[in-house]
Image (cartoon, rainbow, N blue to C red; front, side, top):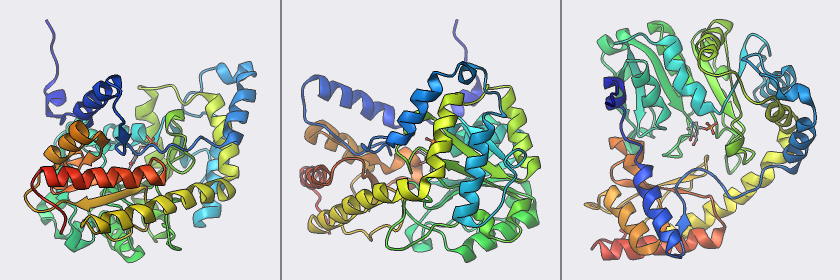
Length: 394
Ligand SMILES: Cc1ncc(COP(=O)(O)O)c(C=O)c1O
């Protein structure tokens, strides 16, 4: 007999799985598939990372258990990067922890700070690890719709006081996946203030802080006064350095919050492969020269995509951050049907808005993960899909 928990039953199914099955079948049939689904760009990792990993592999010490303490060199490089980039200082030993990708840390944070029945505020649409973090800890997710009219911001003050009083954790992410919205500093300041007043842990997920355009600079939550009392911030090498598969990230925050996550993780994992941490340290010390060329390539793709969307009658504002475009569908077109039809009939994989929660209905997400010409081709295929569905752009 197989049994599973009610907790597991409450987890929404990961929407991309169905599309992945269709994609595999199409590829097996020899179809020309363009995949703009996952946020996993086609750029190679930095050669410096590959070289550092190679040499680290030859050192037997790197093959030992990393445990949560990990490689001091990586902790120090991450703390130095944070200080150079945001002007804030964190103790590399007590206020920073390496993670097996930020997804892991975000999801495990719930186990560290939430009790069953606590409320956990989750943006909808939002990165799925947030609702996962809430549900795996038997907390009650409070889904807050991200809507264009409110610049896709979560305004905590608008929630009923009774809910805020029961809230233990809020997940926020700007530059935002999937909406590509960015958050002004005054918004972050009033959010920190509400969290302090209600004793809410603020998980600030910042993996896209380097992928910004047109002179926009994404802040750290720790640029806000008082944030250290309540916030924990997540950073990742995945997107900035095209190292998604390496599974290397870190969190920073006050020693109590980092200690709580450390304790929970101690019972779940034994740390990130030390050789990977060694390579990560090399990359972070060169962040200022490695990130900009990648961002310039994303910017070219973004500009081409914005133009192509305009041409097919689906205008979007050029995003100031992330590798995504959050595109409104013409009225009446269901995002799941659009995504399925686009893949089945045109061989192009877009993320349906509802892959990020019910609040994503009416939108689809384009990830700028392939060459410019292919992004443009994918957008032309989107136009044909809309025609076939009896809709076309505005
Ligand atoms: C908002 C957000 N947070 C976290 C992650 C996870 O990144 P990592 O590869 O560090 O686990 C992603 C990946 O898509 C993301 O979009």
